[in-house]
Image 1: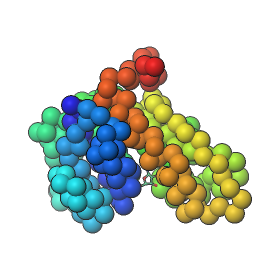
Image 2: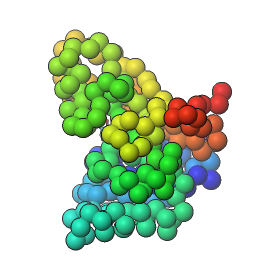
Image 3: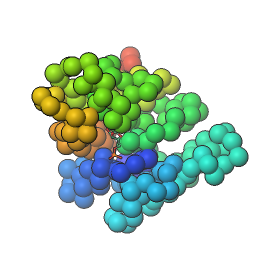
Length: 208
Ligand code: GRF
């Protein structure tokens, strides 16, 4: 059973897709052991509680310095024997110590086709604003392993989504969520939970 922690900061629609996948059996061999947010008001925590899942708030504001916040976050994972950390709209930088401890065991969903429209400053609606500003015709979402860079780790899954005439950032964000994010993240967890993924020479390989 893959003991999974989902880290969130906002509305939690990606978390909801994971919860639904586990409950419906499209994600197997997986337990959502805990949901952790830096934001005590994140609706994602409410979603967890509605499904009887532990909902923790570990906020940098509650600690005298970043170092102690990082230690609290890492302790929370280690005390629960977490196998996989899923960043689902989590907006806090992951400490290097955690990346080292959980090498190739932290995945993130990014709402573009990496390496386009990613890196520092590209998160949430800003990604879709960049897409519309550049005028690309195809965008999408990416699930990748988290390394020391920003959106630079091994790419695991991607899915393309059409940009439609007249799209606003909000309309495009919703389409990318519905047609890509909410499909890719559950699929990625299911693959990892069933031993179908390896990282070889910095590349994610999926066993067919
Ligand atoms: C969304 O913009 C999503 O693309 C990104 O994080 C944001 C939060 O989504 N990954 P939610 O909290 O899962 O609804």
